[in-house]
Length: 214
Image 1 (cartoon, rainbow, N blue to C red):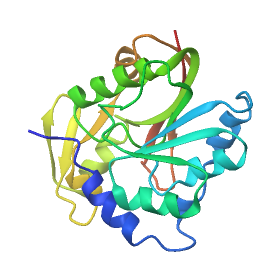
Image 2: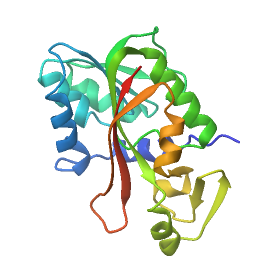
Image 3: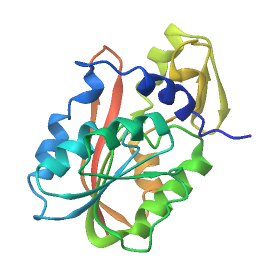
Image 4: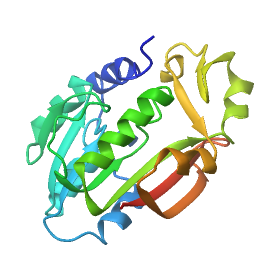
């Protein structure tokens, strides 16, 4: 069963993106992370969407590649220019080993089951240089009861849920984890920062993590 299918939902969202959308504004956490990176660093934005981070990072002088499985998002990035775009799935990255100094993946890699996630993390580790940083988010298992209270749902495999929530990406598999789960998944990395934080809505808990590739 294929589980990394959420790009189907997001491709439709990117096709109708409107000026002023929150998906066009870079996150403050990403800006703070970028402030500590070396000039002209090679950065992969993994799951770049419409480029809110890739385009901002490029404007700061970084060498940025934007990868996504949703072509409509990449088309929006191409309109702006300055960033190389790559259409690909996250668990089969079409890059040589150690191609990037840093990797960003904001609200992306938890869209799938644990097998997809492990392959994706293995690929992140492969294409990242030793000593390079990875910044990303994961869904916290603290969020799961809030989703269960809103929508009927079912577990399809370990830590992986789908919900009866038409019109949202929650009809596609999402992976929820504890801190212990998360650190076990990211073998070969040293944890530099880990925080469980609510996003815009009550109960929207996400792990925010910054790791160093060993």
